[in-house]
Image 1 (cartoon, rainbow, N blue to C red):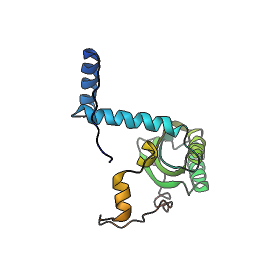
Image 2 (image 1 turned 180 degrees about the vertical axis):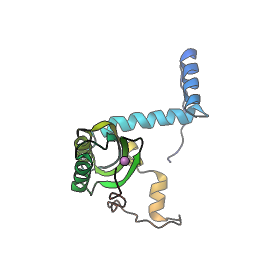
Image 3 (image 1 turned 120 degrees about the vertical axis):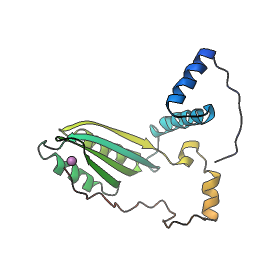
Length: 178
Ligand code: NI
């Protein structure tokens, strides 16, 4: 996190009252945290639409589909195997007698992730779905956070993981389906 600046915001009483009620229902306990999240959300939305191909994005694609649909499971698996470099992990949930939900975590360039998601969402038998795209912090603000810069010099936390932007090996993309 960078240096903290304080600033005043003017707003009509009724607007502020409605805003306070809304963020309370969302679980926020103070206005600042809610406003920071709104700012980050606006920045991400404006950037993901114009993100260059060489910038890595993170995505989660949720699909709800009827597993009885003809050859749908095979088609979904085939498309994901064709883009195995983008697929980090897959979670499959049997949500009812007929329907399955699949949540696919994706990492790679935005164009390829949108293309893969479109191929899956447009399959016959997929009833509902949505792609969520986000960016790493330095891509949101255009600056590397102090914590990230510090951690590159002196990395203290105990768990072991590679400190590079190399793609991770898909670990659970081959789970049992349907
Ligand atoms: Ni299932």
